[in-house]
Image (cartoon, rainbow, N blue to C red; front, side, top):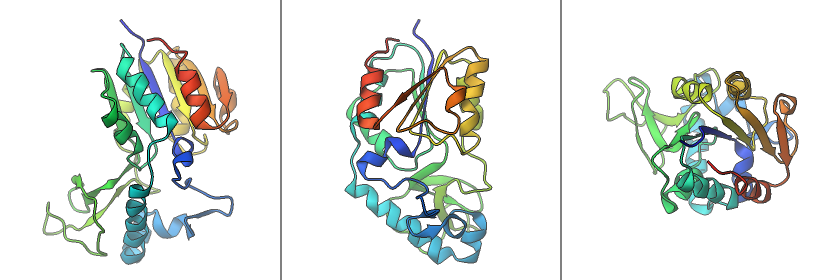
Length: 237
């Protein structure tokens, strides 16, 4: 039986594809304060601004492609004999595209814990649907006459998706890899501690040491398109 592997990815794995990282040095996200575009309060206050922000991000996905790091993870998932749970904080579809190009083994599971740009959800029921077009400020929901469609994104103050499944995977994992994450955003920043408590080997792969680097057994640093393929090539599970 193969090893149980959990991989957590963040903005650093998509940055070399041209996807802007979550927060720039000036504290802005694509020219906006986080509080103006990534909170339920912002959506209630100015739905037009919030919808326009995510409409532009959604359109941008057509201009980017999976990079060598996404493809290396997909190649690993195709040959992994144990369970491989890929948890991404990214709302882009680059992992999805890479895995569509390289079909994964049966034990593979991809979880978008912060939502997906190419989905919309109902404000009344929480139900989600695939969505590739722009959303209007008060786009009606197909699920409820009392709802409207909003970006299927986990905003600040909201609970990340699929936490029970993620914690179950971490509790049984033998190897935990954190790739391209800042180590600053919880609950994801605490995943390494859950994995360590389960007895897993823990490895951080990042452009530079994160805020939580000291909690990992090992660290591998450099551009994701170089470090991720090289490290994953050493794994056999």
